Amino acid sequence: MTEQHKHLQERIGETHTTVQGLVVEAGKVAEFARAVSDDNPIHYDPEAAKSRGFDGVPAPLTFTRTGVFPRYRTGAELDLGFRPAYVLHGEHSYEYERPLLVGDVVSGETTLVDVYEREGSRGGTMTFAEVETVYRDRSDERVLAERATVIETDGAVTESSTDRTPHGDHDDGHRLSDTDHSQNHKAANRSNERLRQTVWSQRRQLPIQLGWAHSKWETQLRR
Image (cartoon, rainbow, N blue to C red; front, side):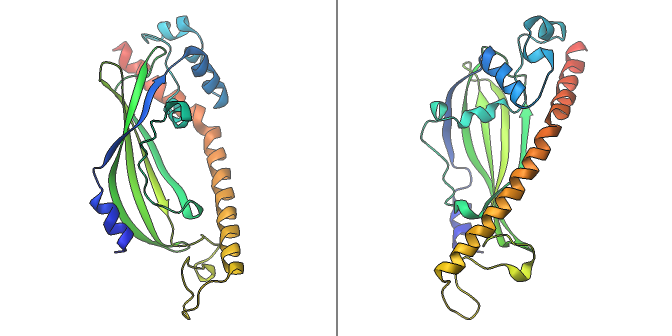
């Protein structure tokens, strides 16, 4: 267990109010829906939303990602101490208590839920941090929980484990040269580019996922 892992484990349960006054506006909901290629009329037309059993126009399920915009940030961030060049985005999920509707104003509290390590075939020892942001409305009622897994690798992720260069010293005990560090960052950039391509591929599937989720809500509402 690394010192960083021990330190993070001691912080499990640490909570910060990270998002304040996130207003769910009709124009922003429609704009976000267009951005994720979701043409479901419930995001644009109050009558369409009403006919499906909603009390208002629902926001797309990932709308709270707009909470990362500076205007909503409180400045009290949950700093994990991870090095940006070696950070990967892992699993991301949402759990709703009710739909997020136009007119809602929500705030989010972010908690460090869990920390653990795993040995990777291409990234050395990987540190996983699970964080949860719970959004509540102005009545302090829980609306949804957004969960994310943030991963820090031991070094730049390469094509094979034999090519991985750790971020510290070489096996022979010598410090990495500036050239070595430059190569590490280039490898990290290539890894991030592959990650962006994967995210874009997943994003194209998002309307299908949103349609399924809203269909599930609608089925429950009709019961």
